Image 1 (cartoon, rainbow, N blue to C red):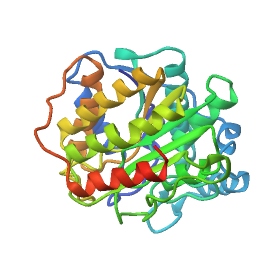
Image 2 (tube, one colour):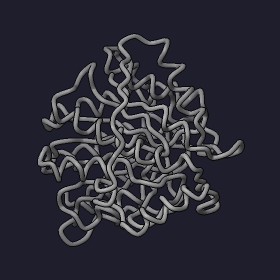
Image 3 (spheres, rainbow, N blue to C red):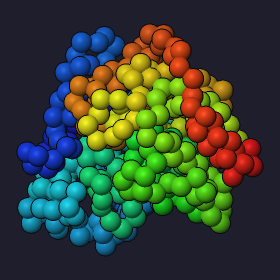
Length: 334
């Protein structure tokens, strides 16, 4: 794979005790150093115009001034430093690069994966939250729509937390489809099954809030039977995966049971899905706070695109998952 990466993302300093640290990127790079076929690209930062295409201009100005003054606690969870402004623009720019390269035809072993930080999917139009300042996947989706490279973009979010920011930004839009599989009741406690969009966006949001303890079979069933039919009907030009790895069974801040091999299986499902619908695909890093499991998850995505065949699970999905998928299909008239 091609990995979008920049040293500027290391300058976002959250302090010694914060779970979202520069060590996350260092761990990924260390793990990928053991793999062949890895290429790194340092893309240009996003412009302020690209960011304000999805974020309120006053909020963006406030963040720039906050960082210039040395940063601090934006909220109890979200910490900025002087280097956060450049890191956030860089992280958004890396996501934009991934979307553009995918649409330009980079696929297979050249599939782009942006490993920037800070992450983005909790950032709403006019505020930072949940470790996120600019919504990287949203910036990328909007940029390729504005450039005319894509008419319709789907964003599939497998982070254990619901991407409330991405959903909110596109909730009334018919040209961006947002789908999320997340742990029910976990921060930020959004993403209910009946949240399916409004106005022009009615039917372009799909949420599957799985019960704590869901594992590989539940996630695969949710993709195969719930997300895939919805994406197929939407018929996107590009699928962006908001790839968080905090649903891993050993991640310190969730109760899900996805294995490292499960992420390989999910990746294989996504690759099959985009082939079936004729879409390009790109990956954008979100969460994942166990350094070893985060690095291993990213490595599994890479190895799958590099030709490794994932090992199938012998588990069956829980009946609660099957029922939830049935309810989603009914909500979306699928």
